[in-house]
Image 1: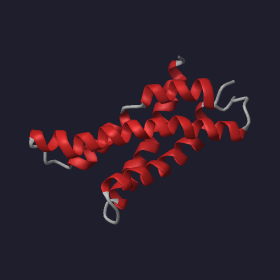
Image 2: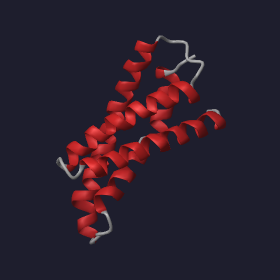
Image 3: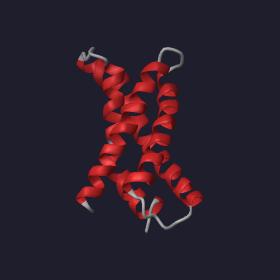
Image 4: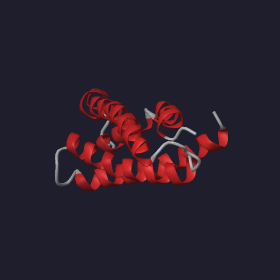
Length: 130
């Protein structure tokens, strides 16, 4: 694992996560929590694909449609992890602990962070392979 490449992946992911969480907060006012996570994830995913393709893995040899397919499949797995962690924290764990400081937003941020390493490995080996 290249430290520089992982650092760039982490920065690109941070930007995409900000788009994801920010849009989830905005969407949360007009749709249910779980649905807002899924829709916001799509915004974050588009941001992440663009940044990763351009800056993190610019030498990818496989065709664009293969990149898009693998990126989508890997991110479906990451979305499942994000959604599960976010909902469990916001709906069960935080209330049980008496956590009241932005529980849905904190839960979502934690959920977005969970698949960082597995996503990097998947995108390096499958999505943007050289």
